[in-house]
Image 1 (tube, helix red, strand yellow):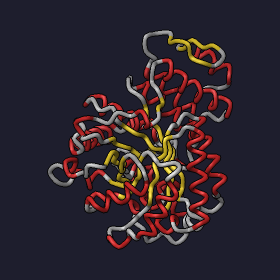
Image 2 (cartoon, rainbow, N blue to C red; image 1 turned 180 degrees about the horizontal axis):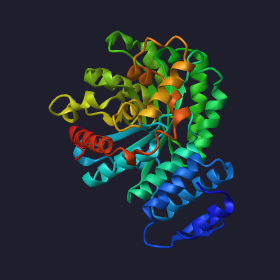
Image 3 (cartoon, helix red, strand yellow; image 1 turned 60 degrees about the vertical axis):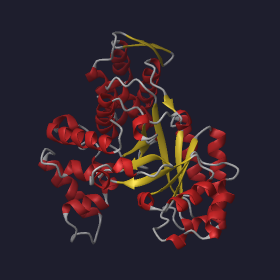
Image 4 (cartoon, one colour; image 1 turned 90 degrees about the horizontal axis):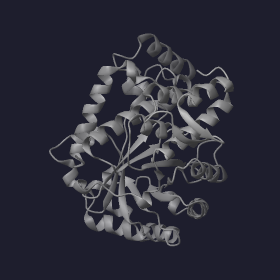
Length: 388
């Protein structure tokens, strides 16, 4: 860790050319890999808030100087062999190492249509964009990075304690300032019919448009019953989006089995350019011969979720003493969960664990078998989606 600002500036002067805090060149052709790791680690864990803030700005500036754009999905070009499908990956607090693996695997296969979604609300958009910029620098990424923030579900009875529509608007503004050019806004079918949440979401759509954010609107559920598509529900969706149609309408993964007519009705009502499927896990896509070929034509994005923390903490290479400490903390701070097994406990309270043990979950370089398994899974996932 850098000891103070002078120590940071002396270290930066050895690898970067800087003018008024902006990167104007590298001392060598490429930044040394260890230097990028050190900048990323200090941007998250350094105890000095000023150092963290300045390094996050420098990492984004270094990526920009290298030609790595943090871009809007309005400009995204889907992978042709995947039938125009983008792969969206939801990342939590330990996003630097995992993003590096995703980018490395994609670069090896010529996949460029990747979206990274901020999956942990406890992480600031500034930190998320800086770490993804660092991962792109580390892996010599050449094409734009599509970064997206996600907001909690918008319906007054669904908002977490202490969260209101105004705070969600602030988060949109912060995301735009941190160069996350994309956002996903969420609402339930019941929320679509609820005047207050409907008005709140319309205001957020307007704000996102004013900020230049490309918006995906996620309607949680609607379940697999065809009678869920009442005329009132689709009419409410149309009223909501007729002034600011989202780029994509995101539905839960079960929608991949919907009849074409049902998909078309939702797409028409939203005014979106295409559909996205959300909440899918790799086993759902890797089981079967050719899942990618089964994706309906309107699908333009597949959003994949992994149980990051549980997979890492329960892996044999994760340090046993850290695992005991983490599980002990969760059991001590969540009364009534003693009957849960270790893995179930981690699945249920993954983000609480991230908040308190992020440092221990950070460094995957000490877990070579996990990295190899993860890269193999990514390769099979790209193949299943016809992205390789």
